Amino acid sequence: MMYNGGKIITGLIIFALIITAPFWLNIGQADEPPEISLDTPVINQLSEKECIESAEFMRSQHPQLLNDWRDQVVREGKTVYTSSSGKEYQISLDNTCLQCHSNRSEFCDACHAYTSVDPYCWDCHGGGIAK
Amino acid sequence: MKIWAPLLAVLALVIIAWLGAGVFEWTSLFGIIIPYTAFAILVLGFIYRVIKWAQSPVPFRIPTTCGQQESLPWIKQDKIENPSKTWEVVGRMALEILFFRSLFRNTQTEKREDKLGFGSSKWLWLGSLVFHWSMLIIVLRHLRYFLYPVPAFVQGLEKLDGFLQVGVPVLYLTDVFVVLGITYLFLRRVVIPQVKYISLAADYFPLFLLLGIATSGILMRYGLKVDIASVKDFAMSLVTFKPQVIPEIGTIFYVHLFLVSSLVAYFPWSKLMHAGGIFMSPTRNLANNSRAVRHINPWNYEVKTHTYEEYEDEFREKMRKVGLPLERE
Image 1 (cartoon, rainbow over the protein chains, first blue to last red):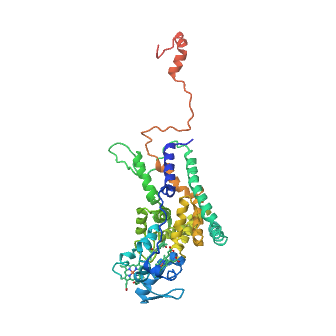
Image 2 (cartoon, rainbow over the protein chains, first blue to last red):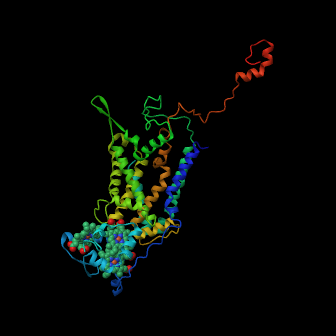
Image 3 (cartoon, chains in turn green, orange):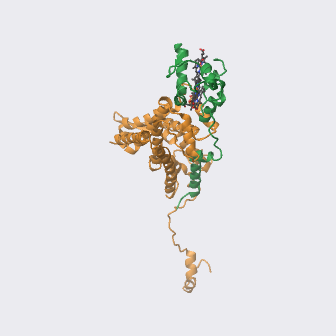
């Protein structure tokens, strides 16, 4: 026997709807994860298709790497990055990363939209004032 | 003991997840079976507890209020403190749930020399508010893992939370605030002797568990790093019922997930149910309309009555014969 059953059941239905929202909001909605495209002229010409570090490292650590790069250039005046495999790269978001990944919207932006990241770097980089 | 046992329990949970997912690689257990089960326990347990509470009768209104009740038209009613209509109650409940209004009234009693002094004490209110709001924003921010396309309000929250643009990935303010809040709520229990005296293991356990969850999450974002895109693939696979573990997500992620699963499964059976209980508090959710509406005690049994009218009907003939006066002929 419940007292004020009507109100309480209504409340519980609202609770159940809210807490299960991620499940039912996705019904017929969820898009496939975006294709991250590596199809750019520079990458196609590479003999071995490698990023500056291993792909696993890049996937989890590239924000940290870019932060270090920024500090190295802007604060320490260092402009060359030596990767763990010994290759040397110019430290630059626009002239290194985006040279190979020139398809920013199908690469950086696609993955960022998927994971809901919106780097404020593009206010200046990627065709802005910092080039 | 009341502090050490829950602390060890949380550390044990961390080690279980570390060994289970990291060393033995039981990733389906820790990634799929436990999270689904824990979530089901949360939803069903929550509903079960509320329905059980709903079986307690509410015999009368409990006007423990501190404002003028509705009275003569020229006496000003305090509509929030002493509501008499449903929408006024909604106002009181909303302020209670969103801003912890009763906690704002928290006072502190202090002995100064041989006098007793009462003073306002807002720290608990502030600490709770900081903790709960950070927690809410963090939970809502996590929707970015469970929805694709990600709704604009989630992105807005992330922007707002990271608006200081400190570091890359940007620092979320709520990450700082939630840890400060939990730390305050913990210190308060160990520093104030009276509070320490009444604190139980069940008070410390949720605090340690929440601290563990916050720490593992912060470690993942700013320290150890995990591949967020894979985490999202995994989270999406859970909510679309096509569960699929992704082996290369680091062990720290499974620790985080296992602590969250533990919290969620523990929730309905613990003091954390105050989240549901606040909606059911009779001193907050009942309008003080005792003088306008008749409230009948639900457990009153049927009283058999025999009115004078019925009595007279029964004995009319006999009464008339002996000449007794009758109300109706």
